[in-house]
Length: 172
Image (cartoon, rainbow, N blue to C red):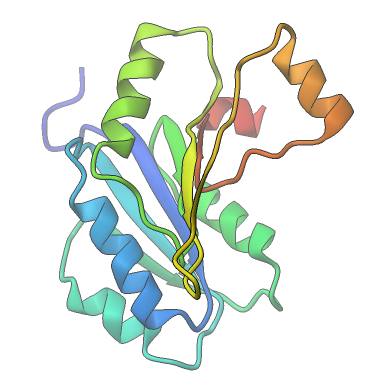
C-alpha cells in the first residue's frame, strides 16, 4: 500500500504551449482553482520566445512540472512528451489558450469512478469568440448507440481540452 507521501495523483493535466504566456497563466489558474485537487500539472513548452517559463515558475507550486522541448511545432509531440512524464492513472488535456470551469476535474472523476467501463470521457464546451463575445456550447456524446463507430465513420469532433483518457488505454 502506498503511503500518503508517495500516492500518485489521479489526473495528469497536460498543457502544451508555445508563446502564449498570458493565456497560459489563465489556463494554469483554472486548474489550480479546481474543486478536485488530486492532480499534477505538466506544462510542455515548445521553446517559447516570450515569458512562458517565467510565468510558470512564478506559480511556485510543487504540483506543476515544466518541460522545455524543441519539437518543431508539433503539438502532438508535446502532448506525447507530457504523457511520458505523467505519473497518474488518467490524462486530462488542456490547451494553453483554454480554461476550465472549476468543477471540471471533479465531474470527470465522479463519472469515471461511477462508470468503470469507460476509458475515454469528454465534456461539453462553452466556446466564446474573443472578438465579438458570442457564445456557443459544443455538445459531445455519448448520445448514440455504438458511439465509437460513429466517431470512426464521421470523425472525432471531441476536442482535447474537453477530454480525459485512461493512461493505460493510451499506452496499450
